[in-house]
Length: 388
Image (cartoon, one colour):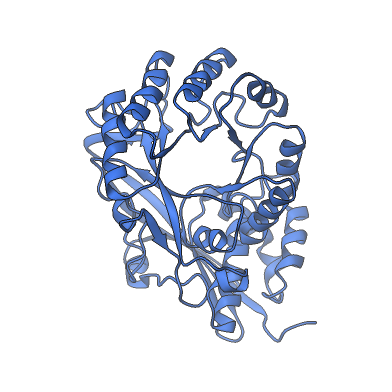
């Protein structure tokens, strides 16, 4: 069946804002604490308009995402925005020679249209039942500037988060740092918080060798970590290497952030390369793609852990049984504001966004359930692309 709705215009709004007390580490990729520094950042708001006046809105994405939106814009114009499955499959094929990042913002905005059309939050369309979600504090990378610059500093921050109500804490360690410090960090954080807090570590593919990954993995075993994520410089994609690591340590692995969409995730599962399955609506084909991955993982008896924060991810998690924690990141004891003030309804993924139990709420308004501050977007706009 076809609805009467048709897509009439796509718009990519690019805006700028300043981050204070943050910089980059040795290689210019990892954001770290740098007191007194100011970084100019770029963000995006993407909209899909329809001939009925219904507009889907999404905050997020990057340059790669919107280059691909431009590649497929003419396909989308005139399409029925409610035919998400058709659009997902057509664009998955169209972008097959690329990483398909453009599909994420498109699909999320289409879900926003559907929720607004029916007057319900996206989580209700997905069968959601949770109203709040347990969160873990996911740290910025370790620095050398008086912030998260030592195992003791990480341990003290973990204790602070525990006292705030967070039930879990995840370490992002140092880039190009001594592996002995990574091991000491794992052990110090566990000693500080005791056994009442789930702990995880994400080296973000920083470790040079399998031996280094193995050493930290054995420290995770000793400290009873919940998971160990993307350890070494294969980039988080090697089925064989991670299966080998799983055979040599007890700590569960969380792999999948760096492969795209449903089929490669299932391949990792079948290769016995992971214990938990990673998924991300931005990276894996939107809400449609994320839910496919989560349900595939469920069929194997595995949990799906959603990467990074955001309204779309709250809606997805509200509708999933086989998931444990919402990733609230990145956070730091000395960085109080990392986000642009893009929402005018109080939505936040800052450190203090959790309640006393360490939970975040699921937005309850129609669609994604958040209100964008369009005055702020227009005031800070630095670029714009319109397809109509």
